[in-house]
Every structure is written in C-alpha cells, then in structure tokens.
Image: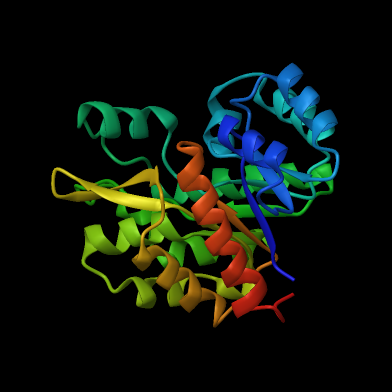
Amino acid sequence: MIQLTTNLSAGLLALIHLKSIRIDGVEVGPYLNIKKLERYKQQLQELKFFFHHGGLLPRLRWFPGTARQMEVYLCCTQSPWLSFHYSLIPPGYAWLGARAGLYLPPPDFEGSVRWSIDAIDRLKKYHLPLLLENMPTFPTCRYAFETAAESIKDILVQTNVDFLLDLAHARIVASVFGLDVHDYIERLPLDKMRQVHVSGPRFRNGHMYDAHEDMLEEDYALLKWVLARTKPEVVTLEYFRDRDKLYRQLIYLEKIIHTDYPGHR
C-alpha cells in the first residue's frame, strides 16, 4: 500500500488528537527546533518521521556545520531515507531571483554537475536511501539547465540514487516553458521514483509559483494520472496552513491512495 504523509504542523497535531484522520507518517525538515522535534517524536510514536532537507546540497557546499546538523536530525527522526532538492545553482542565486528579481550569470554547468555528483556520493556514507527532488523554475526561464529533465535523469543515473517527484514543481516548469506537464513528467526518471510531493501552486503576476496552498481539482487529476503509471511508496501532502483544508485534502488523498489504487506497493 502507498503510505500517506504530510508536514508536521499545528493543524495536523489537532487532527491527530481528534483522531479524525489516518496517516502513516510526517515529513519534517531542519526548520524545526531539535528539542521540539524530539518531543513530537515521543508524542507520535506510531508514526514514521521522514527527514527532508530542501536546500541540503548548496548548504553542504557553502555553510559549515550543515553535515553535523543533518546527522543530528537523522538520528532523532530515524528517517527511512534522506530526501533533498536537486540543485545546480548556489543558494544566493535563488534568493536574489525570487526576492529581488536579480539574476547573476549562470554558474559553470559542468562544474556544478561534478560538484553535485561528488556531494551526493559523499552522502552515501550514511547508508540511507537518497531521494533527489526535481526543482521549480523562475518565471524568467533563467537557469533552465537546472530543471531540464535530461539533467535530472543524468545525475540520478550517475549517482544511482532514487527520485522524489514534486508535482507542483513539475507544473511550474511546464507552465513557464510552455510544455505539456504530462510530457515533461514522462521525461523524468519515473523508474527511480519512490515518493511524490503534492500541493497547490498558484498564479501571481501572471506566473505560476510554488505557493503550497490547498490542492485543486487539477492537482488531484495530475496525481491520479501519475499513480496510474507508477508505484511510489509514499505520497506526501506539503501543506501546513488551515486545519479544515488540511483535513479535506488528507481525506481525499486517503480515498485516492487506499480506494482508487489499493494494489500499489
């Protein structure tokens, strides 16, 4: 059976307390204070904790202490795997592009690929499955090499790690570059996919962005399309806002996963 997980949030804790939902685990990141995380782990002993570090690769390169911090979280969560964003640009590039609309000259592509492969290979010392997540893109189409399906597939093949498919990110890339989202997803390494992230992107100033809002019918339709073609182990709802919307999404996702696709493993 596919496992259903979501972000650890105040709304989720309330729903768990009310026993109004059924999930298999929670996904957490380094944004949580480790002491709080230890308390949550004690309170929610029946749930699996999946550790996801979105900015791990660039932070390993530019921020000392990142590896040690990650080790502490892995020890605390006992996560069955380590997932992180695929990234070929330094963290400052993304911040300047998203917040200030400033785009630095692209880094050396081949050098960035070599560094990413080396960093991923070094993470194998933790003896955990590694899941690489596809990224969204900027509305200006800058740094297009980072979201090219061929680039993602090449790194996954060279490192022999697994794939985390973020459907909102895929929708954003398709929207910005004028692609059919189904064609784009089919070019991604679905044979290596073990997890799916779902959430609701939105439009702002005429461009789709990663809003992490509640899912709409087109988001559920895309998930159903993917599940009809693949067999992921985990579907994760990335949502941490309104409790009632969280409840409705989890109930619908549970129906899709356990009723519409009950034979998936």
